[in-house]
Length: 543
Image 1 (tube, one colour):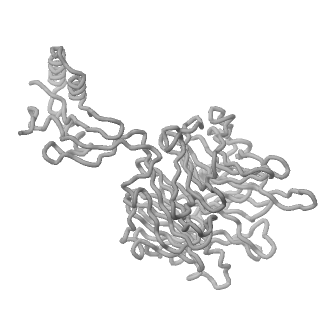
Image 2 (cartoon, rainbow, N blue to C red; image 1 turned 180 degrees about the horizontal axis):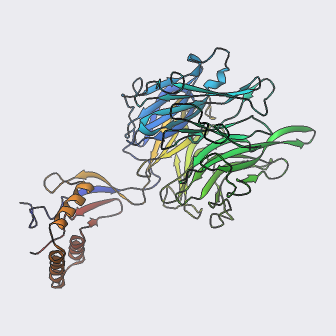
Image 3 (tube, helix red, strand yellow; image 1 turned 30 degrees about the horizontal axis):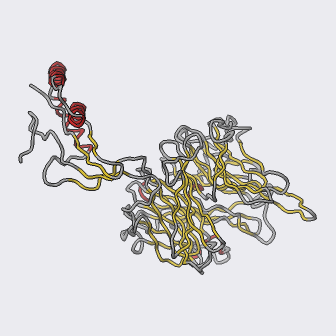
């Protein structure tokens, strides 16, 4: 049978496509093995995950037994990208280039992020020794090779005098989230750090040039400071270039006969784009939440700026007597609590959550680890609607659970693809191994469908039809329209409507096809599990 064409010689209808309806929060079977990728690397922990402009996935992980850490790049289908590093994997260690006197903790995993152009930035954990703070940041090219144009042969080393220095040295407890680094559109780099690890620590943001040098035009000689705000956990930048840092503030508490420093408050601090405290936000540039009671503690995990400019803080707290509770608080752009979210601006989460992202629809997606019986663990992800309620269309009533009969899963970090699919990085430990996620482990990647009932194209009828991408279809329709005068277009449209008016004996199916043809749209026939998609290539014209 020939192809039916319009007066321009273009097919009136595209061939049929068989597509499946996506189910939000379900494993994406097109990724890895049934939505899961396990990379056997003998690691001690998982790190951040990022997605570049081509859909490639960068995942970081701390090595086991030796200093340094690794980062791997995967293709969008979950296979290792052999064009990156050594068959998809590159190993980083400041110990190979730093002074031998430097503490090994500088090699502990800090943050990783994909910069514009596909370059990769890595920063180790802060270390305080002998009254000075240190950290190292390294940049790699898109192929995984060291970028020698950055800093000193690829690495920029920052050293500063802290306000507080622990006796005998110590790690600053810098979270390993990707949000500690941010690359601006001009290639300059924002990095959050602190002046110590205990009470009295200041939050600082440093701006580096694209070449890895301190940008002295920012803040006070390159550094923006919030005094006594705590140790930074995450950094984010809003659409106006303002910089937000979530930090955990510590203070001295006496419980019984013992006095010690404890996590007493979480803060969100906002700086202007040029490094000054933004006094239009909260109370002099700060908002936050204090721990409950003398024995309570509270920690910041993540700060995220939603598409509408509102600020979400993911945290964890304990009252000293019961189990820890994870929560999300949403603030308006001026720092006031958004009372339309959850209960009085706060939503408690059911299980432990380590990371939070916000999708293009303003929904909050979380991921973390749940434990059972002390010997088993699995990954839990939840999605909240804009008002903070559970999105029952995600997973099972708002919660997606990913487990294995042979391995304990631990979920730590999140990222979203361009299609709003959910990527989770973590570790996999054989059942019988340490349920806490410590010890030699494998790197785990999981992809869940973003869903929303969208149609995911998988199979075309190749026996006929006009195979055009959406871009090509738009070009064809624009070209057809450009060859008609406004008068001619009006005549054609009136004729098409008149012809439709004469069709009195139409079945519902026929009517839907006619209306789709008039609109240049798409007809979907089928059940929720699968569908036939009938694409109308062009509007029928009469001339």
